[in-house]
Length: 486
Image 1 (tube, one colour):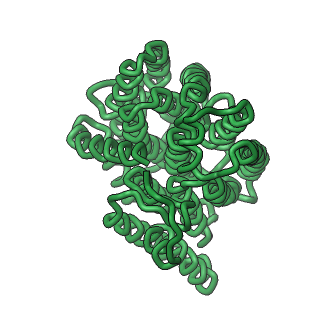
Image 2: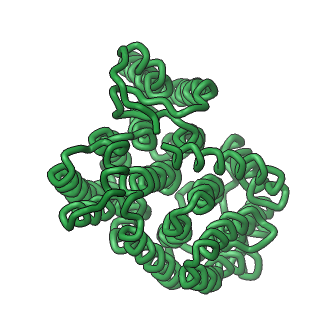
């Protein structure tokens, strides 16, 4: 275990170089936006992409576990893996929103700045080594997300989504904070490095109750049942690029935080939280699979798909093994590509007048009017369903294999069954695109960049993407070992 020692501020800032880069970058972008106004949106967006790249490159010299800010922050391969996919998702979601914001007359310069603020919070979340820094990072990300959900403040649905997200998010934050206070009251510490060995020597009922409250608060952030209720409404009401962002980067960050808290801080009482995580996994898989069947809105369907996929990822955490944790990381990396690609298809569905289409019927006959988009949609749906040899099959296989290796046979069986049920509504989408008659004329793709990103995501999720499995799996395994050797 790494020793927690006092260190100079300059050394801590050097270790936290990605967060420092984002903080300085977003303040610079904000000042530029203030002086140049909304006409600077495009420039600020591409400037944000450059900042994400610089922040990602600052992770290269960070192979070993290093603590900063007197043990509040840790930089290791686990956090580096998650930060790479968080920065990538944040950059992509900033760029693909440009044509949408312009068409909706919401092209405000604040959009990429708020996305970067959320990315800064997420980066802090996955590097948290203390319950206090955990809460600060989580709230920084959440406050930015509330604003994004209501970004179309003149639209009733967007304002409603922002209000629902804020009220339920505040409740979840209160539950989480209460759990943190219980853990501190019964243990006298909030440091993961101290809590782990302390709980390994034995826990009290107060610590167990505190753990349950903390898990409940984090379950809200990953949209795990029974704290999923906000997801379909917020996804449907929020602007489509914002919904794509919510379904990708924050999910990966919250899952990484949940894994770190469970394995590092509460690894000594894994037999207690494994039951809670297993229940959340089963409930999320079942509700996500069944709840999506009757949906007529594409965004609501993708919301239930998100809940369903989080259930599969939680199987890896429930196994509480190195293979299970690497399976979770692998799952989140592939899930981000599949989800962003699916939302890009939704962003491209517009009628002849340029209005966005969100109903399932809008996909009817897509293969005849937009064959390339229909092919990409089919790849994303089959990959989300976990049908081999598409890339989405391998993360599911990975977490199922980890569950079987840890003798969680029931979890694996339920996962396979719900995968079959979930395949029904994914196949329904493909059926609409390829076998139904078109109901209207769709406008052509308005952004070459969005089309290129969709094509890259489709190729990555196709059998060609299997070429990337080796490096991703090795990186996930290295990240898992790094975190477990905390």
